[in-house]
Structure formats: C-alpha cells, structure tokens
Image (tube, each protein chain N blue to C red):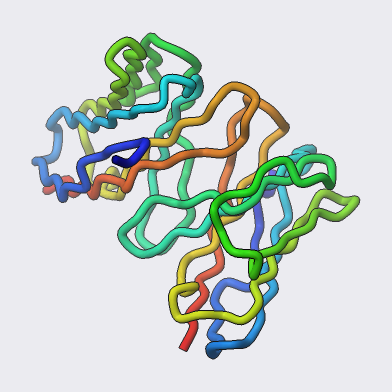
Length: 112
Length: 111
C-alpha cells in the first residue's frame, strides 16, 4: 500500500514569495495534519484537517493556511516567505481521533 | 519549560548493546504516547504507539509509560547499525490529533 506522499520534494524560494505544498494521505485516511520541522528540532504542529474541516491550529502566523479537498488530499500555503520559514514540512495522515499518525517524506523548503 | 523534554544526545553505543531513550513531560492530559524513528532528511517513521500507562513490546523494541512520573522510555535490544537515527517521542491528548514532540535523540550504533 502507498504511504503518505508529498510534493515537491525540495523547493527553493526567495523572501516575500508564496509557496504551496501538497499531500496525499494513505488510502482510507480522512485526517491530515501538517508539521514544520526546523533542523535539530522536533516537528511543530501547524494544522489538522478532518473531513475537510479545520480541527486544530498551532501557533503559526496567518501567513500559513491550508485546506483539505473532497478526496482528502491537502495543501499547505505559506505567503510572504521569511528566511525563518526554511524547514522540512511534514504531512501526517490518520483514520481519525486516537489513531496512529503516519508521516510522509516531507518537503524541504529553503528560503533565500 | 517545554511540554516535552528529551535529551538531544548524541548517544553512541556499541552494536549489540541495550539502548534506553527517555522523555519527560509536564502536561497531565497526555494520553497517547509514540516513538518515531527519523533517518537523516527523511520523514518520521512510527515505531511504537501506546495508550495510557504500561508496557508494549514489538520485536527488539519495548515502550514503557509511567503516567504517575510523567516519564516514557523506549528500549532497543540487540542494537544494530541500522538503528542509527534520531528518535523522537511524541504525545497527544485524548480526542486531539495534535502531536507534541520532543527535540529528538540522535543515536549512533558503532559496529
């Protein structure tokens, strides 16, 4: 079975630009969460979507937004990029509350 | 104070040794406890998933949760060079998908 997939693998942007990251969950999973992992740190929670509704939001500025589509795939958008947004962005999927979350390989974003 | 504390290491042990990795936490609402393994520049891979207190064993891996002490552990028996990775502990509340992670412990198994 295919795991969580994310695209693109790598991305280089300049300050002020915007970026869209994509995630496809494991088949049958209806919950998608996004995390930011800065080098040397554990992942930090950004958003969680379940059945296309936002169910949780971490301590990130409004420049970060996300949505979930009817097929349960998801997009993470970041506007007005800052140098500090450089990180590995991870997507995780699960069947729902109280179930294991499985991570994708991540998208490595570099902001110059 | 961080909600989840984890010794970042690095930790180096000889092949075949027993490895002990630990996390402490301050939020008594945490009910679900996980250990993830992350190889360099890859996504985290779920190793162990436990609910509330107790022990869980899976092959060479044993997870322990002591909610009274707010302390969780992961033991790796007969460690192999392929176990060399960063190990992340993670926790969540009941009915909440938000995972709170430790900083990760970098482990190297020396052949």
